[in-house]
Figure 1 (cartoon, rainbow over the protein chains, first blue to last red):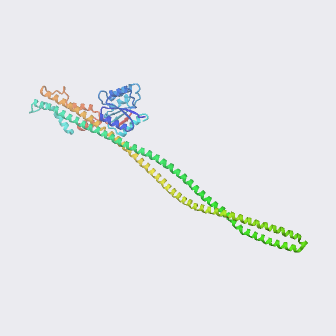
Figure 2: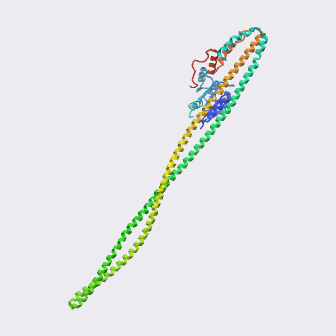
Figure 3: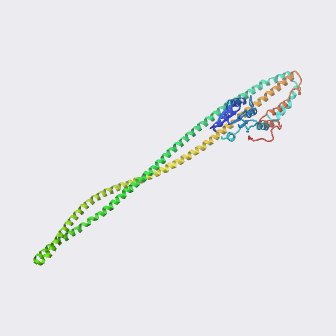
Amino acid sequence: MKKTILIVDDSVTMTMSVKANLEMNGFNIETAGDGVQALGKLSKGLKPDLIITDINMPNMGGMELIKKVKGMPGFRFTPILTLTTETDSQSRDESKRLGATGWLVKPVSGVDLVNVVKRVVPGA
Amino acid sequence: MTRSTVHTLLSKLPLLGSVGSIPRSEAASELREVSPYLDVLSGQLDGALQETENGVRALIGTISNVHQLAQGQFERIESSEQHSGELFSVLDEKIKVDEQLGKILQMFVEHQESEIDANRNRIERLQELKTLTPLVDVIASVARQTNFLAINAAIEAAHAGETGKGFAVLAAEIRQLSNRTAEAAVAISSKITAATAGIDKDLESVNQASERGSATGNMRKVLHDIEGTHARFSEAAKNFSGQLADTIEEVRGGHQSLMQEVSQALGQIQFHDVMRQRTEQVQASMRELNQHLQAMADQMVDTDWDPAEILSLRQRLNQQVENYVMHSQRITHENATGDRVAEGSTRPVIELF
């Protein structure tokens, strides 16, 4: 059975490219334009095997999304990767403290992204 | 813009409050024109971003199409591989059946040849009966001579009178015995003739079988030809199967490489988001520059420049550093200003906690 990944990013080109890359490597992809949309999908029953989120987004950024998802029942152990342009160490450490699984700085090689995803998604 | 140019501009900006021969109102009016100027620049950057976004979208669509086409071709090749496997399986079964049929046919031919040889041997042994005919003639001749002797003995016994009576009885018995021997010889001769006639028929049958033997010889030759053809066919099928498997394996490897390249291309497209964010940061800086220049214009007309009330451009530039989120933005700032703002060491692009 295909693993489901939720991609959260306000950039259309980012969402499209990551979605296309992961789909052609056998994953089922859901997308959201910001943290609010992502939480809406999760509250409606979406149960992804992995969440990949940008940090700087309108309405709700990645940090707040990580914090809220980790506090939701049933999502405590859902792995969350950040995929962002930010290189700031403090932001990385903050995401780690909130419960993120890893920090990826754009642009990430397509093959490396697939390898990381397979590494953090159980059974992928 | 070089670092020295920026430094020159920064050092001159505070002097704008005392523009020598240019009236302050004219200088302020000129500064007001910076606002639409920067709006045009910002609009041009928006347009450029939109055009690159459209291009990137189209590029992603094209890459996805390439992937679908490649995937479709690969699936067709895999389907052909499956069908070829089924075909080779059928051929393999046929080859095995042909081998069994060949063995059965060979056994049949060998059995036929063995039967013909056995019949020939039996007839050759029966033909020895013909050699008995002269012996029968000898027996018949001896019987005739014995009969003559018995007749002569009977005549001599009659001449002897009473003394020859016993001898006459013996001569009669011998004559009777010779007659029976002659009759037996005739019967044996008749039987041998009859038996010989049967052997001749059998010999004719064997000759006909021998002609069929040449037919089995032809059959053996045909069988040999079939075995040769079968071996060549089997070898060709094996070679073709191996070549097809190698080719499909090469196609499979090429397909995997192609998929990796496509994946890499999709990853490289992320440059657009980096460029978008850096451009948006530049646009934010341009808005801030505009605000600063408009504040300066206000100060020129109404009041003197008061650094305590309004941030200097240098201060605003330094504040920009706090808005940077990328290492590359900080490096660009460093290269332009000479100020050290980037982190001493960079962490890896991918970091799993």
